[in-house]
Length: 179
Image 1 (tube, rainbow, N blue to C red):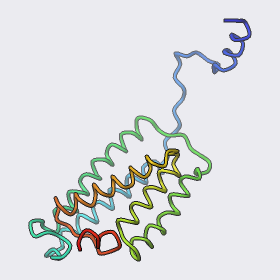
Image 2: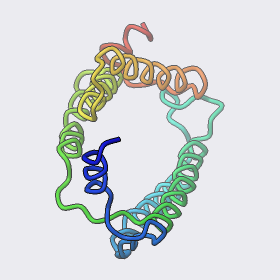
Image 3: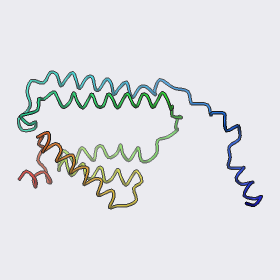
Image 4: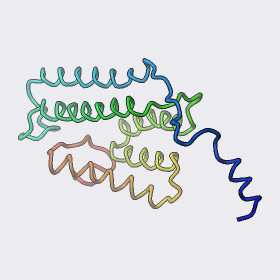
């Protein structure tokens, strides 16, 4: 190793004692706003699902009570939210100035998803949205993005159709399966 390599290496090393930990960013009330809204959402959805009297026969299978699935899903989200709170308290994130372009592109996909899901087909909307999000968030291999979007959508569709006995609204792709 030459002296020049040592000099460049020293310039890359941050000053200070490596044994001294860097100061953690201060926590702000907004760090806990998102988990609080998530808990509120889980509570409201769980309460609403307890007021349902019966399932719509076309959408929910006969073996499933209408309030079981939403309450279970809200319990899973609440547990994941506890993990989020634990992560926030143990490793606070530094403040960022402006959101990256991927965030804005993801937000722009929401109305596209809504239009595709309501006017064309829910499954096609899932495929297009997942494929686009894979590309926007940095996947360079088109075949991987296509495989993720098609595979995930197929898994969701068949899980709901065969296991939960939930039928999706008719559309371009679901008409091929339902006949």
